[in-house]
Image (cartoon, rainbow, N blue to C red; front, side):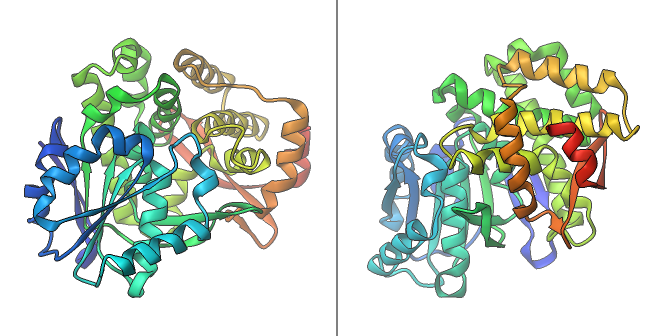
Length: 358
């Protein structure tokens, strides 16, 4: 079992990575608190696959399971109404501050359950048990919890760290191919922002990675988690600007998601196009060369991610960009790549952005 520490003083926690970990969850949880009650938040697809396993290992706690609609419903459930419904389930289960919420599923489940944990009774403990590639390499780590508004993604939320993150790579084997593709966009992001060796590994071993061969899968997940843990430990709340590098591809990507009411492009698809847009901006600003665009585009195509969207979609998404949380004082900031493994945060003028996207 690999253990990665997110170092945040009294809020520090472990990321545990091991095949078969789900069956050991009950035993492992005893190392992170003396919990009286457990509420498992999941979705209907994950409940069918892994609900019985998790419920059995947590049986001494007599857990209650709440299943949201399946992941295909996705971002549409990431709203305040869903969180309110969880509050009522928590009350009905007799949850108090010695209880525990277990977020079992993908990024939507993690965000909703995490935000409910952060705000119910001013905060109850929770753990992340991510079952998708996006969640395992990214969203389950770092304590960002949020829900969407019709006007944009993740506009209501807070920072609230989990007690631990439990990652079982075996859960990826039941994912639809599209879910793996979506997660690979985030994996590629990590290579671009911090780790040239990871990017080269993907270029050279992509077949094994996409087949979810154990050694390849563990290498990828571990590399991404180490980067995320390091960034969060240095800049938990985006106060120094370091954590903003994790938003590479997300500024434009979030706008594309919101444009379709979270029913069009999936998160990873939107991020893939956002990364390439950011790279084109970097080239236009003289910060990067054309080869940087080519390597990313080639790798994204190989994983099956979209690399282009319709001109009208781009134009409409441009109008939504200024609602993004990364806009400060009406000025838009982008994470722009300089080379594989190095990015910077730069303000981008509306004139330059218009030239690029229209």
